[in-house]
Image 1 (tube, rainbow, N blue to C red):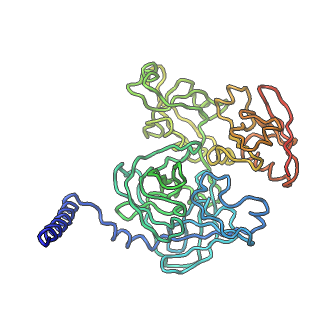
Image 2: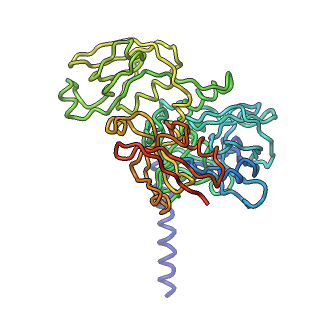
Image 3: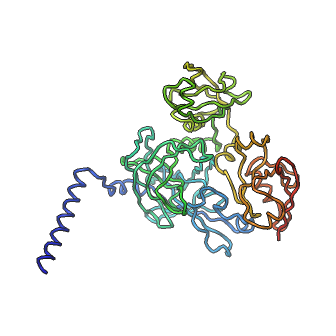
Length: 457
């Protein structure tokens, strides 16, 4: 029996020694030094919302928001306030802090807590709905900061680390690798997300993604999950995109983005063969808006944009972030393929309407307080139905709504007498009504307009 125990102990010691030697041989990273260098610049953020703004309007933090999973759970809603939380990081010694807009949106009081337990009341300098970036400022000097990294040097497979407050566990450290770059998510076409397998949960939102050189290279923002928890798919806003927003918020409070004025689609292998491309790449132009920068520059349908300001356009999804990163009024160079021949054209970018950015990039669908869900019309919906306004009914959860006559696929054109073009307008008009007011909807149902009244108790 003693011999077996000795043999077991020896085997365990040998296994541990072998693992240690293996780690040294393959140079597995040691994150302890990295945490020591960067951790002090990461902050915990608490946002307080008074009852008048939230509970009375039945609009708690995170409701009808695609980033809701990262908010803290509202505490004691029967009291006069609700609380949400997240993370952030300091970018200047005089107290500028980056976080996500959804962490602090509509907050009446924002508190920032450092790892050394110091607390500060934060001022909101500005926020940008399209990128989900917010800039805060605290009144202090000589604060620890994170240094800004170069996202152009990122490589798929390299190690990265996140620090944040998942599920209110402050200053938690997780690690992983970069899984992909330039990801396009739903309507978020102006953000080329960094995808990682770093474990992220609610409360990590707004915290930094850090490379092995102790530099911040992204702002942790969202996950994709069937359960609401981490499933290996985490997404961060590249730090260069975030800093562009920050600089504009500092200087004027308004974020401006360039607009080319084209509708594009991916290039398949079959299309590449027909269009004279050596491989499927670039962005295929399917339509050009009248009077747009693209129209003035002479861009045509069936052109394939393969370069933007000498940057390769690998996929159609990589073009919008490039255009959006350039200020309106800027002259840009585009390389296109037309009828199998390469051509260079120049365009002066228009400006993207701020409200359009918010509607198209931040909210793609929302659940109504009435018991149904609506979504913005896609370009395909508009073409198929022959209409360019309204929101489409995606799902119905209440039988009373069905009994009122509303159907999935109906297009809501008006609430009372107010035209509806986007989800943002839909929610705005709905919030004007009292809780017990009936809702009068003008809908297009199978091509025929009709009024539907939804009673509320």
